[in-house]
Image 1 (tube, rainbow, N blue to C red):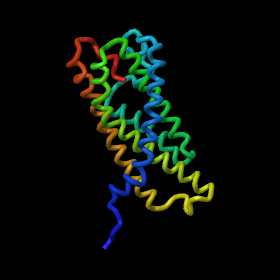
Image 2 (cartoon, rainbow, N blue to C red):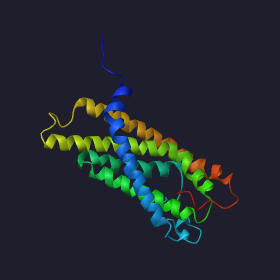
Image 3 (cartoon, rainbow, N blue to C red):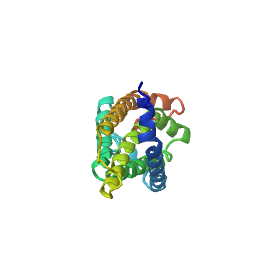
Image 4 (spheres, rainbow, N blue to C red):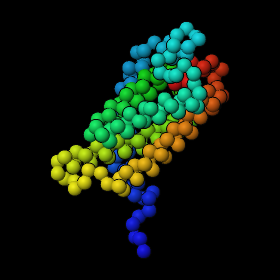
Length: 204
């Protein structure tokens, strides 16, 4: 009989339990800093093409496909922490956190906190876990590489590591597609229930 723990248990204990909290802390601290910066940025920066300016934060056309491609690209960069001693993962977390904080800071100048939450929470509840899962993969591989270089690990990477990382990255990719659909098709409709304002320029 195989007494090894099941795949979900292994993924949780080997990849998520230790590294997701670290990634979440980096993301949160960066978002707080970004919020402080965003409060100093003109609200007009959030306007979409076709209004009085272009948003530097979002694709020109908001669709499930464009958001999926954009976000999968960002997660790919984050996953490069696996081959950069975790540095690309940390940098990506910081940049994503800063972006979220800046956008929230700007949006709060235009609409209420309830509307801002409605614009972020529906897809964020799916997208942020995907981001943290990929960050955990990058951080774990990065830390394990450091341990190997220091002579504290016998192997740089194992077949089990690759298989488990594949499951996690695949799960994150599925979550990104779901989040992109919600953001492109449902976010503004949900947020519009809480305001009469035009939210077309606040889809970041």
